[in-house]
Image (cartoon, rainbow, N blue to C red; front, side, top):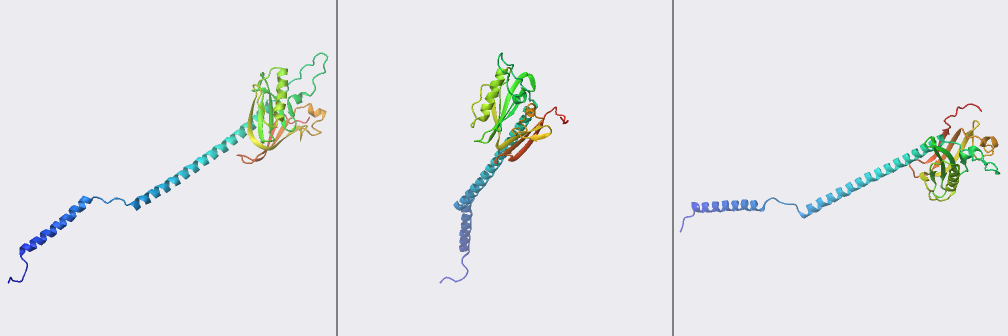
Length: 263
């Protein structure tokens, strides 16, 4: 009967060797699997975050583009109105009187004072005769300002340079026709028109004999008044809403050679 006691030393070596091999096998297996990757849930979460960031970025870019467009539109409308008011002053500064044509033999002289051939307001359209580019030798132009009742557009029309009485008379009549049309008619040869703003109303007052009066009032249409060009013109312009500038606007023009002395 074998003696009971400690196991033989070779058994211990065997167990130890087996444990060592198992440990080595575990380490070997771990090295074969390599680094651990992302799970499907982690990938979905990452993609969701990227999508949210992309949407927020697009909205931010879209808001910036809209703000830039709105700012540009506001700037363009302000500049257009400023240019229109500057042109208004320039037209009046260059105001000239076109003399009446001599009467034909056996015909009565041309009717109407000289002032009415230089500046005429009918309650809707202002027509005026001005020098071209500030130089009378370059010819004259007929200019008209009006507001379209249907669209509310405040517009300016000008003729080509004029060098004869017949050409001036034709342009003067063309300006009246252009201003009284409910819709903008096609421009005549050499003429041009431009829209400056949308207005709800516009009116004019003339400064004569040290007083502002409506051009169509009974006192303004008296014989002595119609013979004179006004010393000043006051523009009342009510701009429509939805533009860079809206509401009432008042602009005074004074004749460059006006001294302010009592008549």
